[in-house]
Image 1 (cartoon, rainbow, N blue to C red):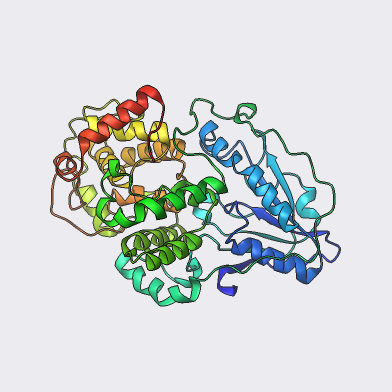
Image 2: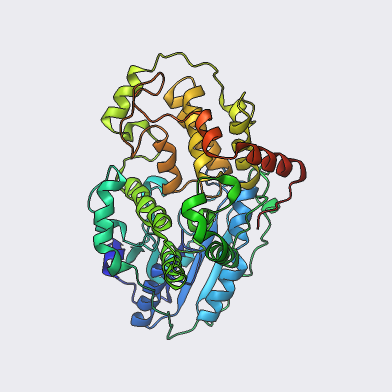
Amino acid sequence: MEERVRKIEPAGERTDGEYVLYWIRANRRVESNHALQFAAGLANRMQTPLLCYESLPCTYPYANDRLHQFAMEGVAETAAALRKLGAGYIFDVGQASRSVSPPHSPTIPNRAAAVVTDDWPETITGPLPQFGVETYAVDSSCIVPSKCIEARSYAAYSIRPKIHRLLDRFLQPVETIRLRRKWTAELPAMPALAPAACEIDHSVPPSTLFRGGRKQAEFHLDRFLQHRLRRYARDKNQPTAHAVSNLSPYLHCGYISSLEIALQVREHAREHKLIADEFLEELIVRRELAFNFAWYAKRVDSLAELPDWVRATLRAHRKDKRDPRYDRAQFEQAATHDDLWNAAQKELLLRGKIHGYYRMYWGKKIVEWSRTPEEALAAMLYLNDKYALDGQDPNSYANILWCFGLHDRPWGERPIFGMVRYMARSGMDRKTDVKAYLSEIDRLERTRKERIT
């Protein structure tokens, strides 16, 4: 456990504290949660109960009905699971004027004997607040704790051996949590779990496909194991084959962990004599490469983080002619000349997630059709952070910058992109069933009804 824990505030324990506070920031689950396990152990050692606190402020970037509802849909399950564990749980819906960072009821941390929170890259969240009491951040987002990879890796091939050397050590189930002292004090009433009551953007409706919560995460994992894993390697880049797991929104919101997914996938593959290597590569190596980037980069949203060769080649082609060229509003409205790109954007608008292979094409074309690389990056960040249920995440930021050359290698020289990898519409037509995808998204746009099984 010690490799997962950072002591982020050296102040000592508060001897008259009433409880250990677990401030839930990223991992909205009881199962497979190292931060909750550490907080419970601390509470047992200090002979106090455990209070878990989660807030959903209205001030985070692009706060809207889609993102709020997905988070709210898991609250009742979280409350029930923590109550069964014997912990207290407070869910707080912030107002527009309140802070996005610490628990905004000041008496909550002030009465804590110690504070534990989820470790999450501060390039995304900003620096953690100071509570004036012993405070720990615990990494329960990665299988191999991020701090075990001591420097930034610039490609999958460089981080892969580091992860594989440590994988057997960390790919282990989390021990069952037991609390010695149960929570008995009265708790505040649960607020209304309705985005309509919040001061947020109400123009972005909930996803047509995804609902929040632990049970939904388990549903998607079970469907993947039973119906999709066996054909994942063959069909993962074929959007209408629906062979992917669709777990990224649930990983981002912390309803499920990559650790428990990996353990179940490995066990299912062993029992059914399947090969799961390609999926586990994406889940572990590629995802944790993104976390490595988010931890060691100065910013997750800047072209300055790209390798020298990328910045040089983009600079050399900065004045290349862009034709056609679109602005952010045209991208947002799916108003380009390319019916496949428009369909991918509509999938984002409707489902809150684009299939990974078409998302790469979506991003590459924004680079190609924008006035400058900076304008392209701003458009991608805006669209992804506003509409994607797996947005504002290390994985999504790394994927966006991949479109500009992050974690990639030089390719053949061409206009606009220079030596950055290019993706052509002809390749999509040749490798995927574009016609079937256009038909699926068109029907979804007309009916708002999903037919995915």
